[in-house]
Image (cartoon, rainbow, N blue to C red; front, side):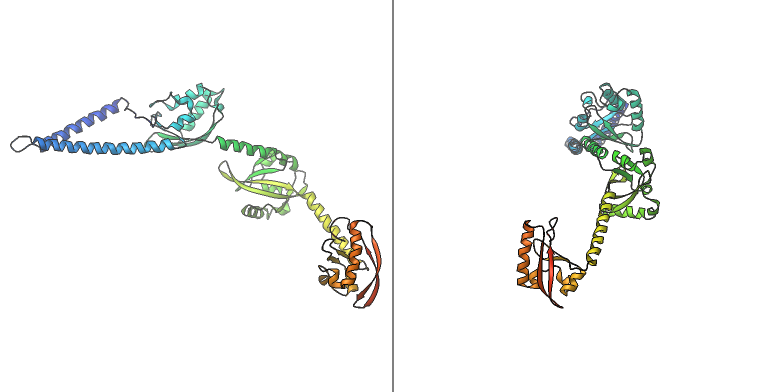
Length: 418
């Protein structure tokens, strides 16, 4: 029955038994009250009898009102539920349902009534093509659905012809019968489809693996192309097998730590199908996949970037070695602040100070106003681009005496130093 109307008791043997037992109990009660109102002389005390009957009636009335209130509260709660709810008896016939249930299954509106069988309800939907997965195989779908329905508990998802998705949860009741819950999950399925599309079409390798077993659960096309493994190979591997053998001993702990910290800046060495080793930076996110804890990984190949960085560092070290080995003093200044940012070993010897006391200071702080003013005039010309370089002879006071030095100045090839 729907929850917005009363349901008359269906005729049958049970109804007869209830009626018969109720009549017997009422007769016994009246007989007892009549006996209690009879005086010793055999006369009936009518006022006392009427008072006793009235008291019984008031009690019955109060009990019925209380039961009615409970039923009303139950109806209010179920009608306010956002889920569709239906209750079936031991014979698999519906006895209770709310409006939301009919909203989710509009083909049943006006079709079901109390006592309608679950199978009849399914066939109604099949006749109207309401179940997408059943099209063209209605009887097979029905048999499988009834088999799942017979389980003590079951959960499944239904794709409806109107485009909606419904999550179906069914549980058997201890006293017989069962209750079904219907939840619309259309928004969730749309988000899931969008996420799957982003996963599959991402130009960056992505894969999903089981948190416990470390086995791959899904791999996108970019990962297949970049790593060179087939999908079959991936599905029979663990993430440990993506690493060169010499790294596998500590790989498990490294993976667990990465998951715990949710870090995205840790480098891993991975192994391609052809044996090539690559450096990757991974970004991870934990999620639930088919009821199990899983880890989604985005892997960015930084092999070329790392190699370029290492080569740049090697070049910088090489140039530093050359600068330190040159017997002439070499220094560099910031073009904006005009403070020194570099001084080599020969410069330390010439100026009689360590680079720690030289770097970060201006010419005024080290050589005084006269030398600094003259230097700034030359530097302004260089920075203006009017001359490619300047070479001047300058007199400097050094710890070893007055020195006449030739100073060549060059503008920076790129913004940064003079």
